[in-house]
Amino acid sequence: MTGLVTVFLIALISVAVLACAGEADLNGGSEPETGVITGIQLQVPAAGSLQNPAWSPDGREVLLTRFRSGYNSGPSDLLVYNLDTGEVRTLVADGSENVNLPGSSWNRVTRQVIFSSSRGLHDEIYIIDVSGSGEEATRVTDRGDRMAYEPSLAPDGKEVVFESHRVDVEENGVITTFSLDGSGNYRTLTPEEDDCRQPNWSPGGVLIVYQALEGGQWDLWLTDRGSGKRRRLTSEPGDETDASFSPDGQRIVYSYDDPDTEAAELFIIPVSGGEPERITVSGGYHGAPSWSPDGSRIAFEAAAEGDPDDSSGTVIRVITLSAGWMTLHRRMEADHLRGF
Image 1 (cartoon, one colour):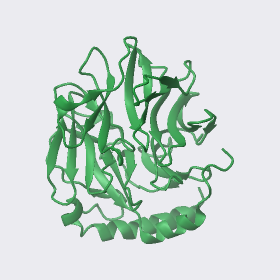
Image 2 (tube, one colour):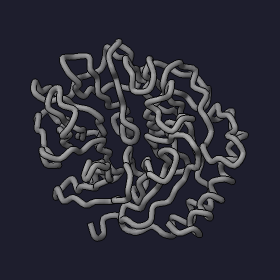
Image 3 (cartoon, helix red, strand yellow):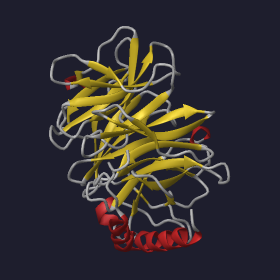
Image 4 (spheres, helix red, strand yellow):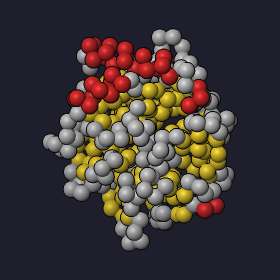
């Protein structure tokens, strides 16, 4: 990326981060170290590794996965953190591994949360009313020879997209959709021989972003839900993962593990392609980002160490994009469907 854009972006976000330091009543945060753009840490009153933040439709709560025994080490529960009160409530906790995906996990229309769970013979997709508990979750997928992970709900709540694997096979993930209208129709969107993961639906319901392993690295791809047409979005050296859309559908935020940096940081790229922009600067790990419904904030998981697998777990942080950044990018927006 150009040095001018990088410096300008970092300057804008630096102002926003400093402004956020006084918002303890809103998001229970603590001020970051001087000169380090890491966002405000949410003071979630829960032990364990806090991961995969996803915003509520009104932007006042954050859904997250709490792994009890360390990073990605189950069992795991779904928690809901209230940004106004600083209180946390348990949505799902049954002793199995229950995991939500950052991004489109909490549906605006149905007010339901979609997640995967290992409570049965193998991982399947479940759905739950936000006011309910784990015992009230409804099983969505049910296939004896396939596991299902990382689900994302379509904006209208009528379809789910997820990564599908053969039982006991972690490789060769297939991006798959399933209709919630009772028809029981599954549709594969990526080839069986590929390894594709972590799909997230666009706010307009037209596009799905996912990551694919090719040449030993993870890159981001887009697929058109209707036509099935696919397009590569990123191809930089290193792994680009954990992608989700901005609320206007024009941009994608993701985690990029650049070989030239100490650890994965957060970047934003237009859906139409182009130069990615770095939005966090730290010696630690930043991943699993999720955009707030009003487009002003991004929540993500963070660890002081470079590799979260070597850490005791991650925390949830929130970075606020400045008004100047948002104004600049509204002017730069292009039709995200053009040239797909």
